[in-house]
Amino acid sequence: MRAEEQALKPHKNIDVENALNVVRPTLGDKSGVALYRLLRLVALEDIIGRGASGAAYLAGKKLGISLGLTNLEDFLQLCQDLNIGIIEVPVVTETKIHVDVYECVTCSGLEPVGRPICHFEGGLIAGAVQTITGRNVRAREVSCIGGLGDKTCGFDIDIE
Ligand SMILES: [Zn+2]
Image (cartoon, rainbow, N blue to C red):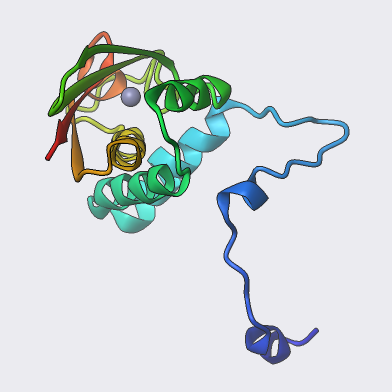
């Protein structure tokens, strides 16, 4: 098919369900952390620069919302299935949640770069909590393993 014909055909967006259709008879559904990190931390930052953190947060939040989760347990299960990290939630109140991520997929092991870098995870948590609570939610990364040399990637979640 020629490029012009291709451009005229209606495109379908790739949704979560479709993206997770993994058919790799030999290699299976596992890949290394390296591939994700190279895309997120090296390639995207190189193209978008400082704006990459905002874009990553928004991407995470949209994705978190699109998951349509109804309770925190399902979200924690998803994080476990995706191997995002070891998640602990030491604080849950009406208006505040604190989430700690140990062995963070994005940054654990990096030589600290002097700024928090796990905006995608923060957005993902915010989006999921927003859907679960039905209220506006913001996440702030207050500690970061590979960004700042902390023990966990810690996220303060403010629920309006
Ligand atoms: Zn992190």
